[in-house]
Length: 614
Ligand SMILES: *[C@@H]1O[C@H](CO)[C@@H](O)[C@H](O)[C@H]1NC(C)=O
Ligand SMILES: *[C@@H]1O[C@H](CO)[C@@H](O)[C@H](O)[C@H]1NC(C)=O
Ligand SMILES: *[C@@H]1O[C@H](CO)[C@@H](O)[C@H](O)[C@H]1NC(C)=O
Ligand SMILES: *[C@@H]1O[C@H](CO)[C@@H](O)[C@H](O)[C@H]1NC(C)=O
Ligand SMILES: *[C@@H]1O[C@H](CO)[C@@H](O)[C@H](O)[C@H]1NC(C)=O
Ligand SMILES: *[C@@H]1O[C@H](CO)[C@@H](O)[C@H](O)[C@H]1NC(C)=O
Ligand SMILES: *[C@@H]1O[C@H](CO)[C@@H](O)[C@H](O)[C@H]1NC(C)=O
Ligand SMILES: *[C@@H]1O[C@H](CO)[C@@H](O)[C@H](O)[C@H]1NC(C)=O
Ligand SMILES: *[C@@H]1O[C@H](CO)[C@@H](O)[C@H](O)[C@H]1NC(C)=O
Ligand SMILES: *[C@@H]1O[C@H](CO)[C@@H](O)[C@H](O)[C@H]1NC(C)=O
Image 1 (cartoon, rainbow, N blue to C red):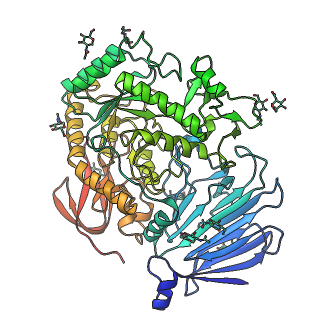
Image 2: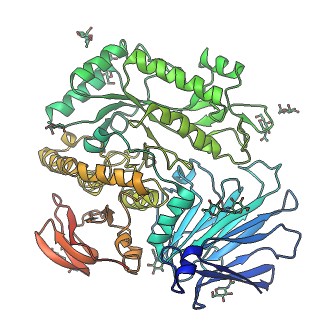
Image 3: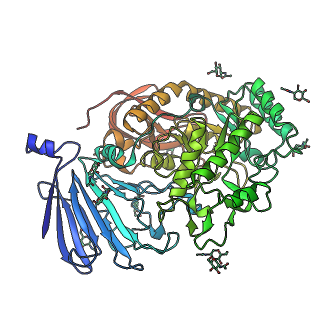
């Protein structure tokens, strides 16, 4: 039995009490069939976490378990190319959070399953963010290193567990011996664990996004018009927004304005004079942003030829092709891991921006799955293919704090909005309204506080949202960092316009609060919209609530997320709460059962006294 004793050294010297943020843990390893079992134990011998390592210390596998502060760092390197390294960590009685963005975004992960699921950014399941980070209500976080060719198994075994599998096969390069390296860190509770993770592995933002994007709605052409846009459609859209009395942060011209994808040149049939259009929109009080993407489609010349001749494109692994299929056809992707290619792309965008009077951009795509598979990238840090996503987002961030991206990969430092992947216009867990709240929580808790919720009412890929869904969607969105309209209130009726004005104004009234929280995120990496357990990590009821969220630590939002519902159960954690709808004081922790909320109402609560939580 090997024992490793851990505690933050300075606190250990100071007293024999348990450490505060970081706690003292012992690692117990015990040989077992096919490897060894391990327990992470508290000072009093209680087990914090158990797991199974698929190898033995004595085998040729280069396994190391080293202590560093209150963390244990597991590091194994395989001995041959086709070796599969697998370690499992039991969920135990704890609830787990974190993991990837998903179209079915459940919260917590208790009942989620994955089977040898590749852990890269990919269009499958809307996995735009795949940070290798998990957090448990028992106060433990796990971080897997970026260069591990990682697959995960979740809840696929007798015990509920998460298994990390390192295997050198697609979508990873198959010529490197796999390695499995991760870190398990214990703290007093999940909040402390997450704060330590921000300092140690996730990082925090260096600035925050544009304040007008936080305050007033973005208006996008996408959901309402799809690709059927031209000069007059856009001017009419702008006129409608103003004549209905709504404010804006900007108007976003989405797909399809180019002569061919990657031309970065307006189609003159649809947009005879782009500069005139943007001047017109600006004279109406709009800023103008433009949808762009990282592809150049086949036959889109001379641009594709120029990029090919200069080796700016991503090839497949054997170097035979750059062609790949994306949702707008067949094309090639710029290799942003090649600095010259990134600069060429940025320069073209800057020229377009200047010529056409574009204020900023909506950067679409960026998942590694859009590349030829497996991709051969310029970067020396290969076999880590998500470096493509990382490099894309980094290069685009040079356009400043008014941009949006929809992917992220170790991008927590950037002062930009990360959009939720396209939501569908339904009430369900299948990428509908319920997942608006859980995706918000998931993104915040893997280190992305500047969440740009997707369009109010969803994208309408299977028809426009109903009036009820549209209104409930807006209400759920009010205390999130930004509002984005595409479907418009005046396409429903006057009541919808009136209700939407109220909530659009309510959001603007709270913009200062959101901006202050954004500044706090810059200081210490705090989430802007944490789950409700954030104010009492020991509250076992709060740990499983997926239909409420916080703005900071003093505003709790409980939107209606079910079709036809005019009431819901609401859980308030400890503290004195002011019910903003009923104008009453309520002491938490408590359940408000069957709390009625008509279509024009939103239940939210402000904390009047804060109770010290341990
Ligand atoms: C997981 O499933 C069990 C059994 O169906 C259910 O009781 C529990 O509430 C679920 N947990 C979550 C977090 O969804
Ligand atoms: C399941 O968990 C229990 C309790 O932690 C442990 O004793 C047992 O060995 C685990 N079973 C498997 C198959 O890992
Ligand atoms: C774990 O240890 C390895 C080898 O010492 C080191 O390279 C790696 O950065 C450590 N990982 C973490 C997450 O601390
Ligand atoms: C130990 O952890 C600290 C803080 O996370 C880190 O800076 C350092 O590189 C780690 N050392 C090793 C050997 O992993
Ligand atoms: C712009 O698009 C609209 C809607 O498809 C169409 O009715 C109109 O004729 C178009 N205008 C021009 C100038 O093409
Ligand atoms: C629009 O926003 C500006 C700046 O915040 C404000 O002065 C103005 O009153 C707002 N107008 C409407 C119609 O909300
Ligand atoms: C745009 O073009 C129209 C029609 O040619 C013209 O009337 C208008 O003055 C122009 N607007 C601007 C801002 O240049
Ligand atoms: C690369 O692309 C070529 C042409 O499409 C294909 O034949 C080849 O199998 C691909 N290489 C790999 C490693 O998939
Ligand atoms: C792909 O490229 C490799 C190396 O250049 C070459 O040997 C192979 O024949 C090519 N395969 C195809 C399908 O073009
Ligand atoms: C919830 O309240 C509504 C009225 O607000 C009432 O019609 C309904 O019966 C109540 N449901 C339950 C389960 O108490």
